[in-house]
Amino acid sequence: MLAGMGGVSYHELVAAVSEAGGIGTFGASTMREGELAREISDLKKLTSKPFGVDLLTALPQHFEQGIRDVIDGGARIFVAGLGVPRDAIDLLHSHNILVGSMCGKVRHAVAAVASGCDFVVAQGTEAGGHTGLVATMALVPQVVDAVSAQVPVVAAGGLFDGRGLAASLALGADAIWVGTRFIATPEARAVNGYKEALVASREDDTVISRSYTGKPCRVVRNEWTNHYEQHPQEIQTFPLQAIASTQANVNHLGHPSGTQVDTSREFYPAGQGTGSINEVTPAGKIVAQIVEQAEQILKSLGNKR
Image (cartoon, rainbow, N blue to C red; front, top):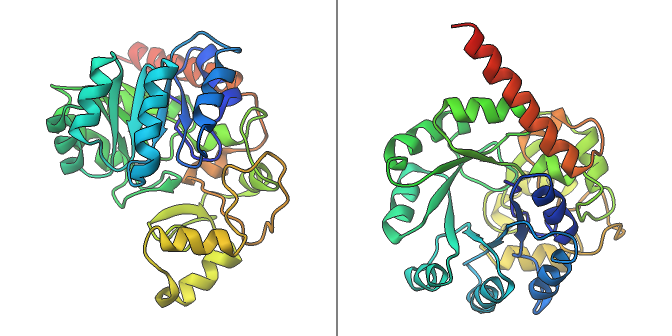
């Protein structure tokens, strides 16, 4: 599954992943009024395959319209990062839309299932963007133990190739949610320097910082994050810090590809898998490589019995 990355996962990337046999997911958190509906319309010109939408429930004014766009647009899957209200779940279910919830702790997964979610995404701290503190390898099997008898579990956080898929299946997950690797693709929307930063980054070049949004968010380390590491008392709560970073001209998520930014301070969400990214690769090729490598690993392990 393509992670619904705000500012990155637009119709070209979503279509490419779905066409290749994955599930493309829109990142609608940064979209302006009417933009999601237009993006879904553009998507349908490129593919008829199923797709999903990831929407931030922390912004109620955008959430209600987003739910209507999801339903009217014919999405098959809805995912939210900060919980899904029960009335929204019931409404989505009435239109045969599956509902998933991002979970950084076991109790989050248990609560999501209790509220009616159809699957959970167990996201480890290695993930890019807003993330928790529990590592993927530790989190996924514990979530599997807690809820897999009731709903499928999708693993996320630092996963970028077929080895991650094979390992996640071994941990009991049913699928994987991949984000950062798909940023370095021709189809992803990205401001100036974003893809280049990922190709150049090592595995330890990201940091969890509240400096851009007020919430813990894994990003490429730079002058902006370094300043707030030294002056944490200056960080405001969400959404005030997000407003502050936007006003400071260092947060351009969702702007058109190639938008010129200050690359030494810009908001580049990224996971710890950045060290594996050596080039910009078409999204469909990445999907095929992940599946092929996982199949080879699982076959090899089976032959060792």
